[in-house]
Image (cartoon, rainbow, N blue to C red; front, side, top):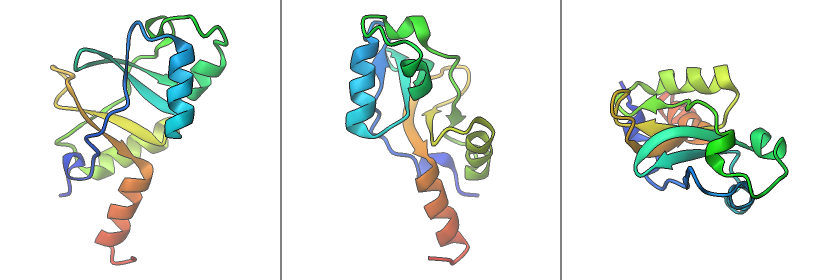
Length: 125
């Protein structure tokens, strides 16, 4: 079994509950990402997607006001579980947490990274 922790990136582009949506939008554009974790310290409390930023053009609204319930995967999960969440949600990246009870963010896993690992595992690269 290949776990999510073995393929995730530990570089986390996250924002706090008080980060203004205008700043979140700039981060998404500069980093070419469509989902940003919302953090309270190191704890995942929500996510903001490109769609939710687009629906809230007022750049002064705090992230905590428009964040969605966090979609995530636990670091000990099999990569197939992460793939199933990505397919179900349509997202291209997921926050990774240590476990459901702590919700401490430990990384990010992307659809591209998972696809690369699966191709290598199946000998197609």
